[in-house]
Image 1 (cartoon, rainbow over the protein chains, first blue to last red):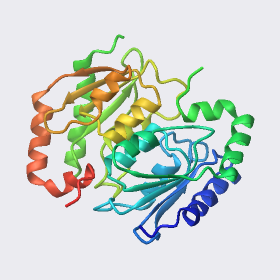
Image 2 (tube, one colour):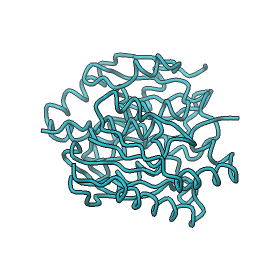
Image 3 (tube, rainbow over the protein chains, first blue to last red):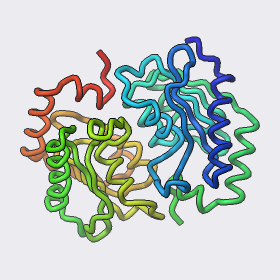
Image 4 (cartoon, rainbow over the protein chains, first blue to last red):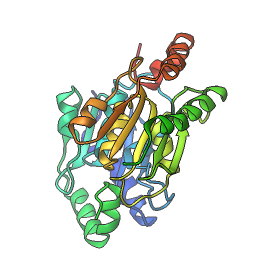
Length: 150
Length: 150
């Protein structure tokens, strides 16, 4: 694999920041090809589009359009993928995942590793801070996004 | 729960047939409220929208808009939910799933049951036939939809 995890994360982080700047939840992602080329990119748009189905990873997946084989692709995301996004990665056979951090939320990346997905966890301080500040400011919105009911 | 599984399936089947009639993959779903009221409904639109992210279940989830609590909702679908859709159900805490059939494809409904989701599997012949005919006619499209590469 010739995807540089650190370089890949910058793309996802750029998306997360764009999401925050437009009033949304700061999680970004990109789907990369075998040489690190961007096939699709996006960020959570629950708020902007009033659409609960648009997580960072599903936005990037959608933006990449219809692909015939995901095995040599990499999903890079600023945050550990939730079960919805982990399920996406598993079902479509995405070969690798690069994760900014899993301190503020841990989804299914351990499960993905068990099922043969190559997982790289970067523990990036900027990603942690972005989520910590967002969760402190908008706890109800964050809970809505991960399905935590009152 | 006052959701009648058989009645619920009719809605999903109607969606699946609408999907087939518009040239798509015949899988339909609906998200129902506690009394069986339709919160959202939809069908796979990979072909129609050229969008790989629109499975039946994700279409129904999206159509229901932003909900604050999914625990008393039921997802009804004509086919056993793939990992992507199973992940959606688990992450958002959807309380119950009604499934038309799992003979032509088995996704994550066993896993959902292990994690506390109430699963009803109907083994409906009409759902089986719809998928058998579709898979026989368009095997490459079906494989694309479930991430099976050549």
